[in-house]
Image 1: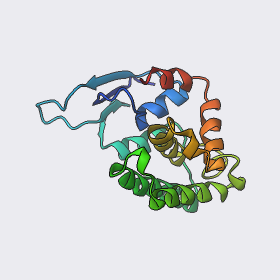
Image 2: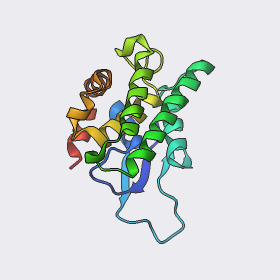
Image 3: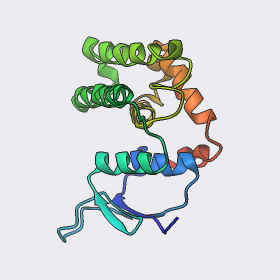
Image 4: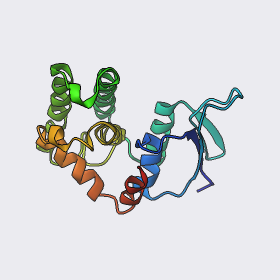
Length: 183
């Protein structure tokens, strides 16, 4: 594989989706972070990989997941992955406006919807779609880590999501180092 270089804004306390995929897989990459948006017209994040420059966070994540075979192939499974990612985006919008102390019924209902989606695949004992990791799993782990890792009491109200969260960490021998680096 050719050299990989990810350019992104510095955020030392949050899991970054693309970094998460690389660290989960144990793929080395050059992590070029910027404390502020550069004065140039450079759009962040962008990824240099396979002799290409890729931009837009979700498109990069899709590309990397496809490249590393964390993708559904069946059209219905592709739909399921995208629908889980849409649920995550809906919840992210709600969370932008509230602190962790203000978990509204809407937020809890969205978490329940996500847990119910997980439960539709093998009673929620594995991954969101099919037998292997997909972008849906990375997206939901990112959400849970960034918003609920310091509030496991709330996450504990959703035992299948908590099980997924722990299973995700345990399934990668290289992920723990990245998670510990976040302050």
